[in-house]
Image (cartoon, rainbow, N blue to C red; front, top):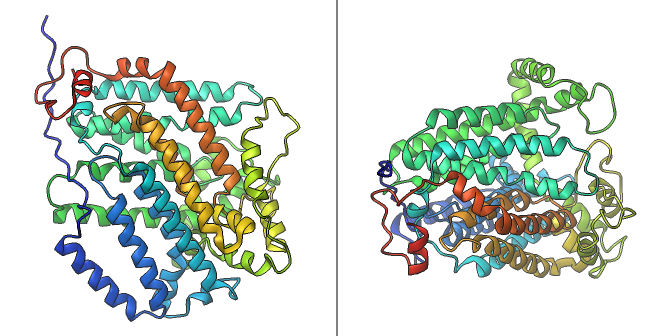
Length: 496
């Protein structure tokens, strides 16, 4: 019986901007942006921020595969520059946006320098990763099987997380991130074949609605993931329809963020039902019903307040300014002790060291800010990984951030190279995005979650990945239209 062939739509991608220089359109945009920056109230800081964007696009933007590092660094760039953009909009000095105003300029410079250092470390480790088109790998994916695998994994994890398994919470959390790997292959297979679009939209909608039943804005994940994947499927030049769709999507995301910010405090208080702490004491249906009522109650005034609050929520170098004012003036530098503590915390798993200290981000924040800022029982506010390095090394913190970038880049590359073609390597590596895209994550949490995730994924690669491949790939020969001549012999065999 002949193997059924599925007709695939052409999958054309755009190569990243050549390293030799910028194209004329990019140069024109840079010139216009520079002219605009010079007439703002904060010209020097705005130029530095725009330079960061230029470097980000130059070295991390690619349409040949999901640009994980690009989107992660872009989100961190926004967190460093949100206050600056708001100050430029209001026509006031950048420091006026800060609560801790005295060291505002030093905090911004430290934040941007650290982002450059992190990006440099990531680029050094990932610049030689294969940028081949993923046509051959995608052509072997069956969207129906990918959907089945995605749903089965969600059910499996729901059962697993409900079991009493003390001491392995980090392992289960790392395994849960693999859901986004399954979403990745399902999403890509649907866009590549044009089949199962409606089930994909249903999955995105359900993920969005169900994730609203949480203390934190976990719905952001299902909004971020398609944005990270869609540019891979742009064909040829970006048309006006692409720009319109991008603008509408951006407007939707901004409005979701504003409305959520306007209602989240009341929503969290309702879910806690008067109990102190980050707890949920109502059913999903009741919680979502109350959320709907709160959303409908948002008027113009609350919407404006939510927009301003969103800027300050994104803006995450205010604490860095306060930290600079307290260390070393009142507290001495730790001289590496904080970084060493992060490493030791990772290499002493709670399963074998039950007496290990329970860490609370807000406790550390209060200590190094020299004042009460947040209650650890009701919030998870933290000092951020750049603040951790500043506590250790002062204004030499970017050197520590550079080393961190090398480590993250190496671990990402390690997972990516689990598959010679790269597709299944991305399946394993891409969920690292959710560990590295936030500026406020503490060093100890970033390092711990990242190392645990990589170790779990290496086990998945060794023992489960062959079965996962067989469960979602088409049987028989490669579908027609698959080109394998550009692959080396080993990769060509994998495509057949």
